[in-house]
Length: 119
Image 1 (cartoon, rainbow, N blue to C red):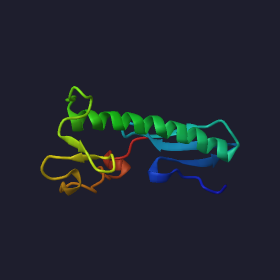
Image 2 (cartoon, helix red, strand yellow; image 1 turned 60 degrees about the vertical axis):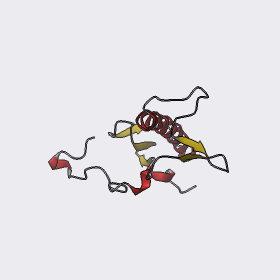
Image 3 (cartoon, helix red, strand yellow; image 1 turned 135 degrees about the vertical axis):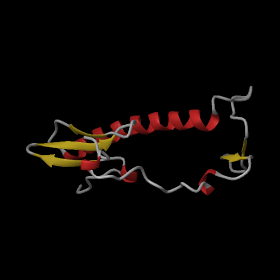
Image 4 (cartoon, helix red, strand yellow; image 1 turned 90 degrees about the vertical axis):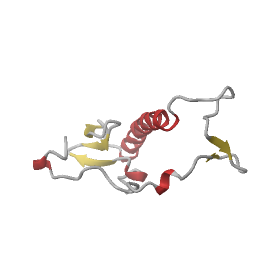
C-alpha cells in the first residue's frame, strides 16, 4: 500500500527514522504530529484512522449543538427538520446551509511568522 493520506484531509503519515509519524489537525484546529511507534505502514494508517474518527465525532457533536441548539421534540427528532422520502432529514426552514455566503472559505491561512500556523 502506497497511500499515506486519509480521505477528506483527515490526516497523513510520514516515515521518520524507523517509525511512521501521524500528522493531523485535532478537534480544536491545532496541527499535531505524533509518533505511531510502528514500522508497519498499514498499522500506522489504521491508528491514524481511529484518531481521525474520534476527532470527527467531537466536531460533529459541536456542530449538532450549534445546529439544533439543544431543542428536540418529544419524539427525539430535532425541531425544524422533517424526514425526506428516502429517510434523510430535510430542513423545513427558509434557505439552506449551503447557500450561506461564507461556504467554502477556509480558516485563516497566514504564515507561521504571522501566527497563523501552530505546531
